[in-house]
Amino acid sequence: MVTLIEDVPATMQVVYQRPESLSCVSTHYCPGCTHGIAHRLLAEALDELGLRDRTILVAPVGCSVFAYNYFEVDGCEAAHGRAPAMATGLKRVQPDRIVVTYQGDGDLVSIGAAEILHAAARGENITTIFVNNAVYGMTGGQMAPTTLLGQKTTSSPFGRNVSSSGYPIRMSELLSQLDGTAYIVRRSLHDVAHIRKAKKAIVTALKAQMHGLGFSMVELLSSCPTNWGIPADQALNWIAENMLPYYPVGDYKVHPEVTTL
Amino acid sequence: MSRTLLKGNVAIAEAAVRAGLQAYFGYPITPQTELLEYLASRMVELDRVFLQAESEVAAINMVYGAACSGVRAMTSSSSPGFSLMQEGLSYIAASDVPCVVVDVMRGGPGLGNIQPSQADYFQVTRSAGHGDYHPIVLAPASVQEAIDFTTLAFELAERYRHLVILAADGQIGQMMEPAELPPMQSARETRPEWALSGANGRKKNVITSLHMQPEDEEAFNQKIQRRLAKIRQVEQRSVEYWTNDAELLVIGYGTAGRIAYTAVERAREMGMKVGLLRPQTLWPFPEERISELADEIQSCLVVEMNAGQMIEDVRLATSGQVPIEFFGRMGGMIPMPDEILNAIEASYARITRPVAHHANGVRG
Ligand SMILES: Cc1ncc(C[n+]2csc(CCOP(=O)(O)OP(=O)(O)O)c2C)c(N)n1
Ligand code: SF4
Image (cartoon, rainbow over all chains, first blue to last red):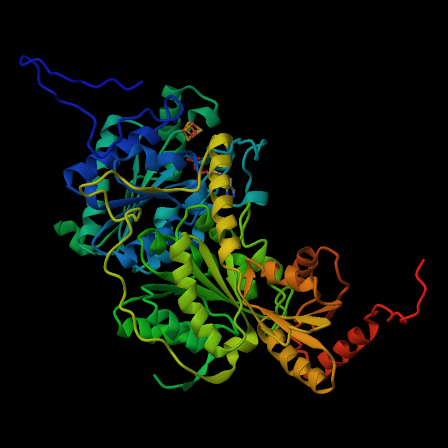
């Protein structure tokens, strides 16, 4: 159940509340899952930039498949991996709207690798929130292209090994090579300091879109306590200890004009 | 308007432009490519959206996105490319967004070849994506019909908020004929109320094909089925020649139907009572008319450029009332009028007419 603060006594001040862009509903995410944090950050960024009423959100296939239920913006549900293509269609016919895709690592790096690569290369003026939790969450924790070497998943029960599955893909680094990209950064959701930086990056990415600078993406290192099989608090440490070394946070592409925004 | 000499693919493209096409996404594949190439300049001249996608998978999902914003959107491809679009087509069909897809069919299976074929009949009428639905499928037999059906495709797509496929065999796409184009309609300015355009001053719009509760999914399926039942009732289209006294009914669509016309005409000259029915909609199949005719004819000959696919619909429509025979060429081969005429003669000869009774015949 969601409780609303109806009447705030005069002696009190609201310092933290639900962003307007976030729907007043409970989500289906597992306890301790950072999808919820990512949602909140995106909603806050949309509010701050006054974009709620001209934004269209493209939800992926993955745990965030219901994202359109959680945001007070127009939304749709793309086929697995095809969100950037759907977003391209939406944006091309209404360039004055803000189009955002929200995608997991299976969705974006595996089945939808071609679509994200080409959307980025075309400099498609859209923003992608890329949630990297190193597994396929929704289908029960199988290996993703982002699964770390040695990481055990339900489809790599002995740990991911190079000889059969090759190396994890660093998508931000890869996409940053493309001239069509305006802003490509990686952030993490494992502690407050990093979360604040993630929020800032999402604001910048949306600004890049508002100014028509090209493709923008914020990769968020995220937890999946359920499929990693560890408690929520330890899952955050797991991000710091295991994901950060392989997926360093940082700015991989910042168009010169983005720095002036 | 005067008639001009037009290539099928170009005619479809220009007809789509004149129908107010606002966004086209496609990927090159013979024998459809001229359609894409034509729109590459034409759409840009008109300040409309043209984009060469990275694949047919991307193209259909771009069309899906554009259609979700309530504009007239289209893609075109040929058989292998159309196969790649299946998942996207299903999402579109499950979202009530109007879209038009052109399949200029070529020889298959596999990479096959680039010659004309009708081997996608099952794919376009039955399995254009997973799940329980049929798209509306229009099958032109001339460049003029390709133009008219393109206009009609957009109208039907919007009337029913449904997926419409223009299934032209490669011959229709490639040949040149004099034809007349309709007047130019400007691209629509207003957007339907369900379109995704930003929740400005209204509640948010959501377009999804996801219904987690089976009860909800079933209810949605029932809605699609009601729509399909309506379409089936009012949109069956076909043309007929010499059917009023026909003993043998030839049935063929697209190029096969057109060549069959020549063969049937010759059969008539030879004194055979043969008629032709050419389906214009493959789904809904013109089953009503064929079922009526089944009461009047003795036999039926289905002609297709495949191994016999529409023949199954003919069997269903005639419910075993008459023998159904088949003549087809495959793999990009086009039947010759003589071949069809031979098949007609053979079928005609096999008709067993009721033995005429003598006036004084004794009946037990
Ligand atoms: C075409 C297709 N293939 C496979 C699936 C099954 N599937 C659903 S979600 C998913 C993985 C999603 O993982 P990810 O993108 O990492 O997101 P997460 O659930 O971890 O947030 C898969 C394989 C599907 N729905 N569609
Ligand atoms: S399965 Fe993992 S990614 Fe999905 S909601 Fe649960 S914790 Fe989050």
